[in-house]
Length: 229
Ligand code: GLY
Image (tube, rainbow, N blue to C red):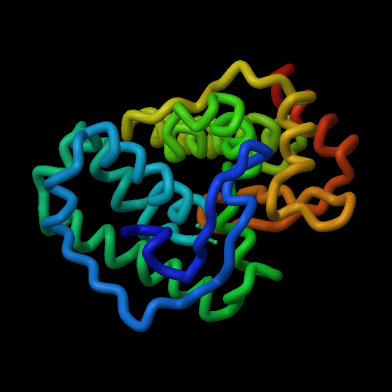
């Protein structure tokens, strides 16, 4: 509802990796009824929050602020009980997604920023034989990139703590035991890889993100430094 429903990306997972076969196919209409969320078990709802947090981190300080306010007031795990908040939150996410895909429908530019946390998340997901939920893996991927970004001097330690604290407040993990070597090897199969370069999405400041092209060796060094923090 907050991500995949908008943008016309269709795909299937292959044993080699996540979403490796697919096409862009825009629907003629998207109807979102937030009451449908009431049918979800808590784990699935929580999983979806990874994409919400992603939007806040990469592009939306207003969304970040409302999510943080809820968390600071101890209500992060009970947002399901606040239908007005849910409706506002979903609308903010849809607006974010629409603004990105209007600018870049076929993933050649800004749309790639939506891959924040996904390059590593997809490897974790595939290595779990798709048993771990997508949102859980994306949250872990964001945590790993956050650590690496601090080690690279691209993100302040205090913003990193805030981001990781917010992911945890919404019930998602920020760590995984994947090694940098496994992450890089897996990223070489990612559908977003172009040529020999890996597009790494980095948040330098909450609310803004950048696509950083790295060679596999550069990506390895980036991740290793993050592990040593
Ligand atoms: N879910 C990311 C995208 O639609 O590009």
